[in-house]
Image (cartoon, rainbow, N blue to C red; front, top):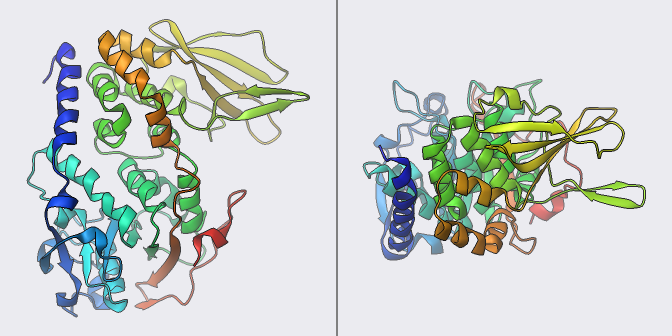
Length: 412
């Protein structure tokens, strides 16, 4: 276990190690599932009800995988492997799709990445594998038997899945969703293309707030320091120094200040309230906060509006605004420009580290905000009935769409 004073030095060293490692995609071959060699029995409908075990699938070595746009694909999936058999329904259905659509090679993290590597190197290779999500067709499979179809959005907000989809939604080829949870009376909230459009227009702040409120799960929350590579040093130090609640709230604030803010009009006046959350109630009292506290209410507010400072070790770092509406309360967090410096100073990040962090302001904004000029993939969605052992002729319509969603942008 590292001492607090050593945490920053260790993670800066780790970040350099990651940057200096040769890319696994540029300099070496990758293992892939040899789809043509998979037994027909494994891909039979009867067998797929319980899935396939990746350890039992034929593999091959593939060179220059990021150039195989015609006969290869990469899988983004919810790990749904059985504890008893190691089988995955999602992987099995993805393979069946590949076999029937002429895809010869399927790259999957559990096969393409050496799972025996030390964790730091393993996560490094996981990030590098995401280069494929930008270059070749993507197959996505996230259904779980115990999760309602309407809750798919929460699954897509799991940080590792979200990081893959943020790359995939800039893929110039295609993204195909394979799902089997389309029971009668249970529909998805949004189409998969609509979900991707939402991800493309947002960053990570919503995801982190969902973790704080228990809507989204994450096995190791320390991995955020790897996923949010532009924040690796400060998040590593926060994770080692702060309580869980303080660490996650600090991560939220650090990302929210670089994501899109919302301007609210009041007659002829415009007010920039900062980051607008999707929550009607922010449950600060249930986050397990220790060093973050709420300050007093401010008097400079409009009718039906409240505002309180959010403090870290007594120093104000943000303003929390809540406005009562006819439907539900709306909440914003305006993060102060000096918030990052305040948090870094309080957890012992040296002046040099704080100065380096400040110089990368533009990089963090670019990291969190996907360019509107980035390519858009063609998105298709395939449904399966395991009970009837067939592909569905069409996927049931979702419950609705988000404002401004244009499905034509995601079709070719």
